[in-house]
Image (cartoon, rainbow, N blue to C red; front, side, top):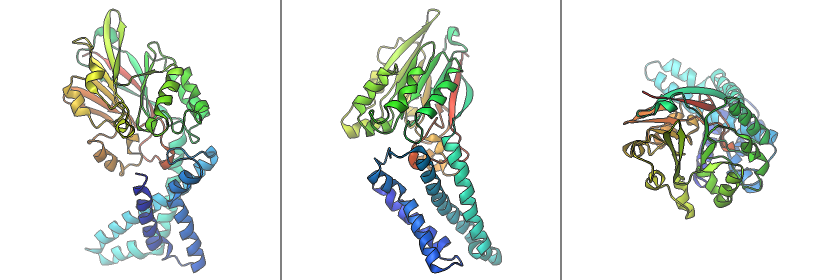
Length: 377
């Protein structure tokens, strides 16, 4: 992604200059300055990654990151809206040439597209950085013992503790989660961006998570980008039970429920422990329902065939932008957001509690703290 990203952003920049900047009725110097500003916005990731930390975690103050996210959002949405306008114009041109010409060439339409990009970026960044609301769903699990009927677990995922979502934001998520008084809390990967040393204060609030049966977590792909081994130690020091191709058994009134967790496929690039479903399920007594935590949802069919009752995943952020979520869905085996029935298994893909600072936009795909109520048939 690191090598492809500047190329994609460069193409979008050329398109925005060609279809928006150059046709403006403004002095050439003004248009040149606007083109340069959009170029800096297009190369936001490369600039912050090279001079202010890494691509995964630029070390800049939160207000600066929010401002940069907004500027990048304006550029990104402007390019997409221009493309949408041009497609609509061509489609209208075929039966109604005058209407197509108006959409493609009218200065009023061009300025409206620019204004809409400004507004949508403002809304999108606010949606990205606000503390998520609670979303409650009920899931019926075949074979669930009656002792676990009404069992409440909270799923957090993609917290991405960073300079964008720092200690105060994480503490607010923890407080909102604890107010639900859950039986179990699970975190399905991508807890932080940056090194354990840089993020020590930002992840500290996770130690205050409280649930009757504890807090269970798994790694996501972002855990591997900066010192995976020490991140696992740091999370365990915070009181999190980290499942790396392993499981735990939870007992209530003499009945049992299993929670298993996998590592992420990114492990292979670093010579670390790859996901192993067999190892995670090994030793679970026959007939015990299994909840599987896997960061990515793409292997749901395989997991269903292995007898998993409920899979909880994140990673997709719900696609972040309505319409563009179809691309994310295609890249994740057809799964992007919400409940799915996969064979005899239920899959839930959370929109994510936080997100990566590199695309701090949410439009129509809100973040969430997910409360899941288990029901026996």
